[in-house]
Image (cartoon, rainbow, N blue to C red; front, side, top):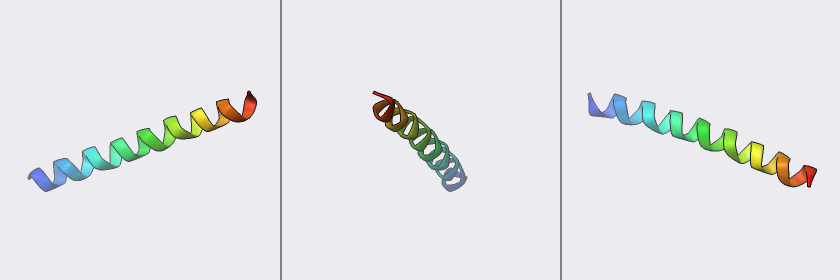
Length: 31
């Protein structure tokens, strides 16, 4: 099922992106 695989990858990428973005945002605020 390509759709299921794509969905999982999309969710993983989205969560990772939000995690890194939040980390970068905190770093900027600290600086």
